[in-house]
Length: 202
Image (cartoon, rainbow, N blue to C red; front, side):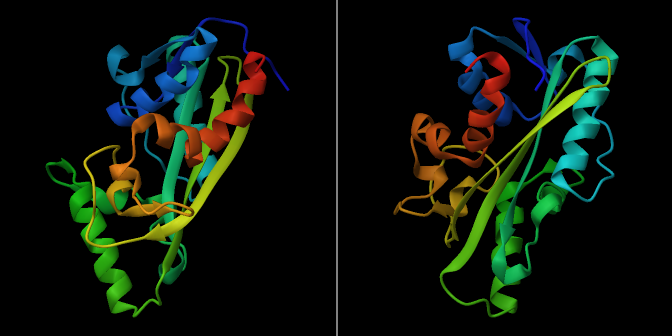
């Protein structure tokens, strides 16, 4: 495995919530994180049909544009009652002409589960795929997940994305109700990060 030896990392995301999570997870390693939006980088088209494929597009585009190592995350929620949807298209379900509306996306997801008469509990999982890319074209891939169920109505104002409707196994609260430090300890992204930190000497 290739080691990360610098102290500055570009995070290839324009999502402020995701950037904040990644900054918090990397803070113990003394690594300064800069978001793609801070450098006015365009968002590349995510044309792949897998989490790994889309994470690679984002990481390599950012590394090539800046000459910095770049970390990209592609993540989403898979609902068993919808045969794994929205999955890799999680963010697409939130798209509107005015930007992403995850409250709308969550409502759409629940309505689809209702229409499918999906059994309860409505099991689901969050998946996260991290790709750490270097400007020379090399990369390392790390994958994580957390199992749980989707619930309705949505609950909580913490987190981002689908957090208010995802209740992880072993908890009676959603990610949206959970203290961010607790979420960062158990989340799908944390699972992937536990594997990633081996690149940083963790």
